Image (cartoon, rainbow, N blue to C red):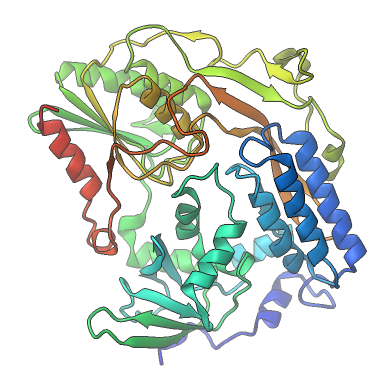
Length: 481
């Protein structure tokens, strides 16, 4: 039996600590009438404000999902029980920018005081593998495949989490990537699993099952352990960097996010200088690594593309809102109408953005890079990153290596968003308002950007920090193909 970080704390006591002396540790159970009222508010708000709500799921199918959720609200429930019914219905929209979150008091506790699952994992295929452990005494669990948690097989756990996790379209990687990134959070919020955790593992060496009971650990304590035990995981301050390999023949531009700074420059200026350096070094191949780049500023995705094309181009076809303001704004603290001068109402009854810098014909940037472009991507490549990837793919300007990306090929719904708080349960729903239509035509309607060379790292690769995706890219750069 492993040593405990602290003595096992029952969930009720743990939650009592963060609700500040309420008479009951979790919000009181509410009658079905109040639960259904919140469900209806969420559904109506999404219908009114989400301008891409039926992009992937037809209205009859989505209505059926909410009707099925309503039928399950047939007995008193607390807010978390309600959330676990609402989230799969909202996830049916298949929009990675639309989300359901717990009441703020509970979400705050998940950051501060709540004992969560003490392991990081990665979802590979239908398997869940341990990558990091955070209790003070390590158990040498890294690399083991989880069979069960608290008696539930991994397949059942993944089925529950995948149904409630948002993601664009039918990307095969978007939802597993998100679950991998935040498994402890999802395990409680959607899976309702609480400390202590009885975990069964496959031992690949002996072929036997190892059973371990683990206490939980708070997110803040996890961060402290991570800083000491896994310093290699610390994110660089720069959101981009440029390196040269093979006597400058290959340039590698890593972009971790389309925001922030690199080498103390704004990212837009850094791109200007990076391409000047690539020209100066006379590199023949540029590898652009946007794995786990969750997006950022729209303009910067287009700016990066502009160095890779040599003729004027279109980036967006259209940007659409259902309206400038909505009745559900009363459930949000910070909702603001879309400025009148930013949009134009047209005959389709929609409001179309007329001011966005990425609309209309765009010009190439100098210095132009005309050599071979190889792009590395995975399920964490999302939002602005996928706008860049889709346009690059459509213009036949890249070789794509890695895994399917996480964002819709033809666009997404994001931009200005409103987070409403449902009046009874206090569950929160984030509703993006602007739907993007990219100037592309060469993808699969419900999928993301697909790789030319599909390579998925194994658990062994991840633990040894081996990078088969980059290795394949280097091979392609060296070849004449």
